[in-house]
Image 1: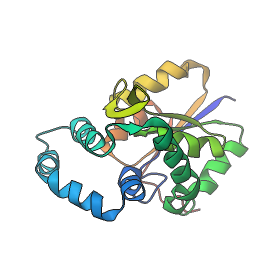
Image 2: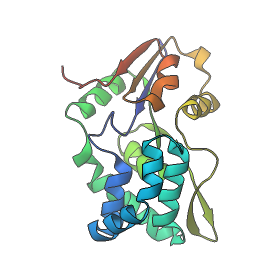
Image 3: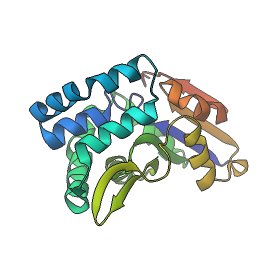
Image 4: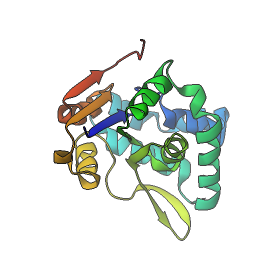
Length: 198
């Protein structure tokens, strides 16, 4: 039996948003708090849904990472993936991943966070990763997306680009937010805000 398992990352596998944690890791608390205060009017507009998740996140990424050298950025992403993401995982998340891998399923992490840190972590566990790609120009991160933010409907678009879903007998999906709704609707077995408790 061919079985595909899809995991959202932030809030599903992790206890907190990895972008927020990465900002603190990369820049330190003082710089991040100062930046958030400066961007607070934008974030307030997002909170009351005047601007979209896509737009707010794009502004945040551009503010904090525009013109960062790609080599340095990726080195820090790998460090974060290796040494910090394990501390963010929900209790039981790794066991659930290992359960699906042990059943010889194709296990995929599908995330709106940048692939620069989600992919290295996924690959350490032998997982496939589909995540937001960041634009690079002249070997520097711009903070803008390369393509679309891997969120909502775009998650389904990206999954279908990489997999012929008709070849799978069963699709299991895990998510925790409205941004996962379309991905969950693909599934024959779906888990929303699961605790991963046995």
